[in-house]
Image 1 (cartoon, one colour):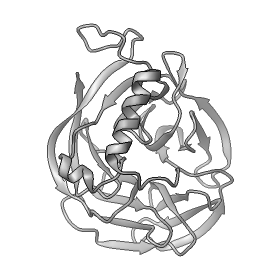
Image 2 (image 1 turned 60 degrees about the vertical axis):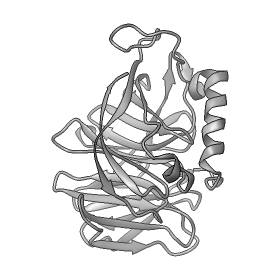
Image 3 (image 1 turned 45 degrees about the horizontal axis):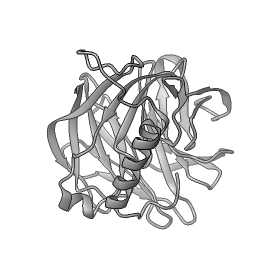
Length: 275
């Protein structure tokens, strides 16, 4: 991810608005018209994040990755050199386990695979494998790319990573060796700055940095099939002290998601509904 993340949210919102006006919300398909079902003229489903409930979130957490397991454990990765960490605990409580990353590591995306957890780093060229229960470090693996987002497609037994570009990369779960990649496009146009990822079956949800936009991607083709507007979750007062959206976690057994962001005081339980 890019280092300039302490830009005030007001400025980020302004820049995001300018980009949307000039290039169709950051390189995707702009809302050139929608049918009654909420699909843009490009056939991309237009959705919004409808809040179902709120949960507390550490306002000092510079969130980089979020994942909920079927066993009910919420994992979170945070960034910034000297402040990077991994936390794990119940959805409705404080983290029960936490571990810090030593300097100069800058923590990024995470994903859980059974008894282990992978955490990638931003520009350190390393991925860290951890015990999913204790978060103890098991080993470090050379990564060879800039690390942004990470998720696991269990049915295909592959990892999916982002590096801030318009491409998703597929990797071997044990070694993180690259096996392929796909270009992400919306209406035939590349969608760049793909950030935090969440895998749900063949779909990959990605937030587009530094906006409140989430894209739903067909992981096999790279085609964007849906765009989610997650703007307005924080009050103006909360947003003034926070940074950008950067946490997406599917809630197992439901069609709902958790959303949060860097230095956000809350997590939001949401459903993606037509707009």
